[in-house]
Amino acid sequence: MDKKETGEYVTMHDSRSGKEFRFALLDGSVGPSVIDIRKLYAETGYFTYDPGFTSTASCDSRLTYIDGDEGVLLHGGYSIEDLAEKANYLEVCHLLLHGELPTQAQYDTFSHNITTHTMLHDQMQYFFRGFRRDAHPMAIMVGAVGALSAFYHDVTDISDENQRMIASHRLIAKMPTLAAMAYKYSVGQPFIYPDNSLSYAANFLKMTFGTPTQEFSVPDSVVRVMDQIFILHADHEQNASTSTVRLAGSSMANPFACISAGISSLWGPAHGGANEAVLDMLHQIGTKDRVPEFIKRAKDKDDPFRLMGFGHRVYKNYDPRAGVLKASVRQVLDELGVADEPLLDLALELERIALEDEYFVQRKLFPNVDFYSGIILKAMGFPTSMFTVLFALSRTVGWISQWKEMHEDPQKRIGRPRQLFLGEDRRDFVDIAQR
Image (tube, rainbow, N blue to C red):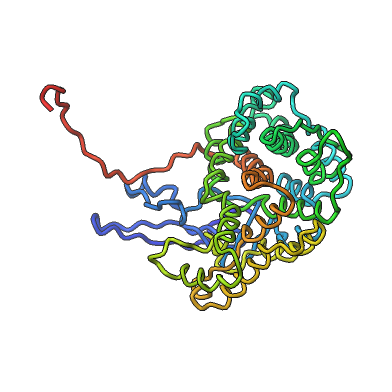
């Protein structure tokens, strides 16, 4: 469904000039109507002021819809709960890239197109050696993904639809390889080549934790939860990193540079580092008997302590992704032999008390996806420095789908936010001797 004028409008009365202006209301397929202000400046001489763009639709999209009040997340109309339970990550990738879940024949073709691109150009390994061994994996990812444009410049003509799709496949395919290499480099182990006989998630786990000296195996249930984590982070509407990718892409930058820009944005602790912050918080609390103490501190506006993993910029209800992981976390810990993980018991107690406390209920501070993902990733053996890398790996399909959608939009324009200027007006220059 395309956006359409409703025939209704919003009237703006300008008290300075005494004039009135009308702006059309546009409807999407679901969600609130929007006020079409594209001609606002031309007609009125005014801009809008919206720091953080929290009340501004910067684009139209068919990919992902969030109803934060109801706790709903849809990809192509399918609920995240159904996708996490019934689909695998590559099916969701196909859905985001093509708008539909694949038939079996389409899935076979799509899976083949991804797996044939999992290897990296062999010279890329020398690129890694330029980093210090203690370099943060996200620093490596920013550089390595940006460098892909130097190795795969045959698909950087973004006006070519076929090149856009090949670049999309390459990014989805190579991101697990790069992420695993970033980890291996940090721990001084040899890189493991992709094994295209394995599923997307199993291949990544093997490249990350396998060694040349012994066979690698991991329980199917753990592979499945890894795949679920990829699905749950695949796309999330116009968040900071996705908006960064779109803004970079609007300048006609190549896809590898745009995804590198998205990784840089995701690296910020306010965006991609929340699950690491949850673990830090749980370690700080320490034991279940101290939960009431920290609940009290969290309610004290003069205390810097905050409950991490509760609340969300968009969701004013229970994050549907958190529900999926909560149902899986115990099984994963059992399979990995860490069923007595004290952090999980602590997290469950913290969640129980917080959800019964009127302070948090009134403010709609429900657990989000980061509340449980960190515990699962820690149990799998990932260091906290890899948590945001896994987020970037998962989100690549969302970023590249948004990038692709933007380039298919005939109304695409280079991004150019305006500003409310508060600096000095024109001044006469004074020579340095007279200042």
